[in-house]
Length: 320
Ligand code: DGY
Image (cartoon, rainbow, N blue to C red):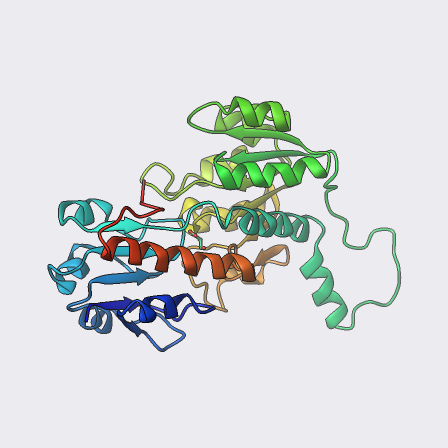
């Protein structure tokens, strides 16, 4: 019986479709990721792997699985933890979950923008600490959302969905992208500019790029210093797109007013990390795609593609 190793339990019943189709489904039982040694042992002899963004899927892991490994199905759209070249050269198909998580991730990015700008978490802590004694004209002022200019860095599916939400708040949308997006420009009135100009003009900047060698520390000290005084940075892409030390500096000494982060570097962020002691940094634990229906659909996508490849059919969602 061919074996599918799944590095974390998935929501819903999608794994049952693999069992019903006659495959042995071996699920890592813990909430935490399998340690490297355990991972290398558990993949041995597997025909398929269902992986998460915390698993380092490299040549060593593929070789540990052995020549029977046919498909790696990633439960995420991002593939930066997978050595795609190593998979290609071994004839292993890689699939992922594009599209389905676009709206859930854009929703969370906008929630972080609103929470960071309008000091929602800071306000909650203030009330919790018993400091709410009166209404005051100067209490917890923050930048206005409506009518602001938002800069969207990376204008793929998620960047555009985020821009659609920003338009609902009457924001002017600037974007960077390798290619112009005339359809989105027409729909959203968005203006394509160079990154430097976007940083200088935007009140809010939201990151939506994949992590690649080109986007590693894209937001470094120099770029953060180019941002407008009082700007807010939102990151729901990958933590390493931002240089954390430079971000802290920009929050402490300006120009940044606040940041909303669903992804961090390091990730997970330890509870005593200096980012968490900044009053206007809002951090969520990489839950951009954590809409219930989205996560169920992602489970169907990965199991569907495992089945397709093991049955020698074309996968629906191959890695680009
Ligand atoms: C992704 O899909 O890449 C997200 O980061 C997790 O869903």
